[in-house]
Image (cartoon, rainbow, N blue to C red):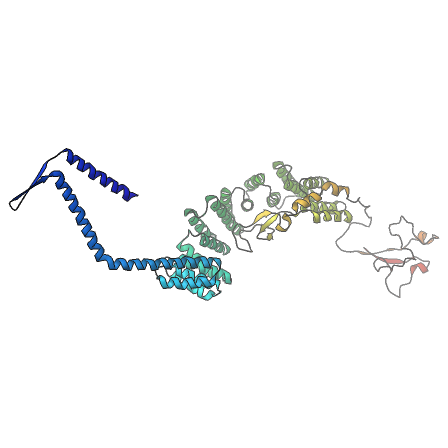
Length: 530
């Protein structure tokens, strides 16, 4: 298109020049070797232009004849190169489709038509064909050869990295990934793998330095970079918490600035401030995090901020959190647990039932079972609440790649992925959570709750069995005409005509030296086991 425009401009310029000369007629005289040559100006200009054109044509013909051998050679070379690239393209498509035979055939044809040192894709095609055919040693040799060429070094390192991961050689994979990341930090796969490896080794400073390089190279977005940096800072703060509370506090507060809704950072920052006796500032951080998103770990950390607090003090702190986020399941459960610790069973039961009405899940019914155990000790009612807990949806937990943890971790123990843990219900209960929540109702559970049984007067319960001796009967009971005790008696005797054998516990010892007290008039003692 440009050439056409230039040609049109030249033609217009010539036409304009000739028209200008035609409007201004004149004669041109030339004296050469004593001879006078005279012609019109327009004719002379036309002859000059024709001479220039003739010279250009002659020069083109001479140049064409002189360069014809090279032109012919270049023509056949270009044709051969085109055939080689066509074979290379066909081979790469075949390798992508898994056609090992076609890939191998096209690789051999490409090597015959093209120079391998000038076209690195031939080595890639041969390596892919070897991988498809299962000749991994040959493929690794090809990838190692690629690392010697600056143009294909990154490609070779990636191939070696994938082969090392396939064989489970994590140390070799780490070395290949770090080498690729050092040479080209803009490679996403190398940077991500190196970041995870350095995090697994606890090299938090090196991991954050690599993260900054990725951010500067715009490999990852700013929001994602801030989130990952907050995770790394929180992990480093967790390690510093025991020996360097000040450093842990600085890292955790910096992480909160990068990710304000990151609960583990708030917890670590508060624990570090607790160690420095800065209770008010730590409480402020936890209250702010609780206001943003109530989390049971935040609540437990806040309530048990000081180890010397009484149960009543913990209840007041729990009620303060409830005032920040009222009508919340976590707030109600926190207050119910604190009230249970203070033996305020009425408040504990009220808060637990309110939590169950908002979200009937496992923790609410387990707490009701604990309240029932502490208040009444009725095992029937306790088992009723435990049965409801078995049918209720499971509680949220820290889940990563199918692994459930009771605490937050910076890396997944399954895949090593950074920032993999999410606070949610375990994966095997997510699908049925909606249906289960429909079948569980606190109102129906309260309606089917068994009545409280009459408490026994044998004394307080203990964690182990107590063997005691008691009188089998008083003198007045022995003088009664009927040996059968009244039906209202708590320890009613079993009828003599019962076909079932008496168990040892609560009956007589199997000792021939002990006589039957029913056959003797005087009262004897019997052994009873609770």
